[in-house]
Length: 58
Image (cartoon, rainbow, N blue to C red; front, side):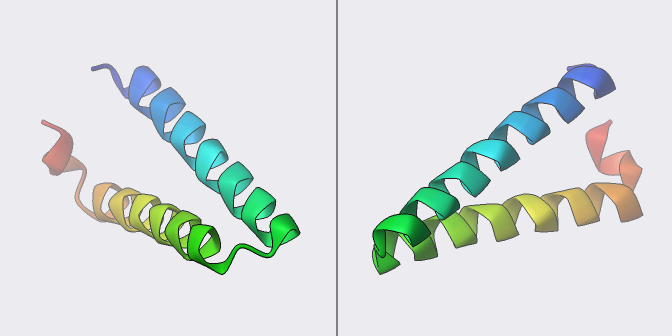
């Protein structure tokens, strides 16, 4: 997967997680809110790992 495609896939996944978080917050669904927050945090951790150690992509 090219770096450009990787960025695109991350952006899509993060946007989906943000959207799920916003929708759960609007509905007051705490369980879904927790799930969406966990997805967002996992994506952020993954990006942090890649930024600090780009060799993990090769």
